[in-house]
Length: 185
Image (cartoon, rainbow, N blue to C red; front, top):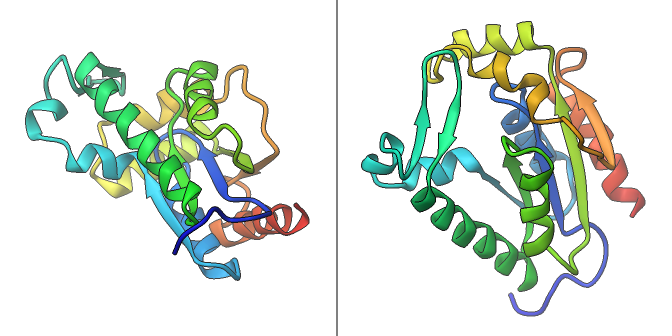
């Protein structure tokens, strides 16, 4: 496929805390939207990094209680990953980004910079901290406390084109709300 997607939403950015339901919404969007969409999440980036960056001070660290810290080497690879996502969109792919804006507005600004000139739908995925903490516990693959710590943090100072709440609606219902906004642009 060559050439940029000509019109309409090209990127859907889902921002929400850990265990808020972003990945489930992304899968539902892939099923609901008529075009083919790639779902790309920050968890995938972390999974493909060397193990030393998943534990070291230069990579990403997960402390007891759910605090997440990122170092310079992680940030360098994350910047390259973000540029790569934008490049895929610029040559024709539609992409759903599943991210956690730990840096708040600064995190969004980093995405805005690489996605400049593209049609982006910004989506806030909210979930009550207690509900997210229950999901985190059931998943068993997250540091305890991360969901509760991030539930509100990632939304501070943020504005969105659309917001959904997975504590009040199932992923498919949230995806339908988002898909309707995609169809209107």
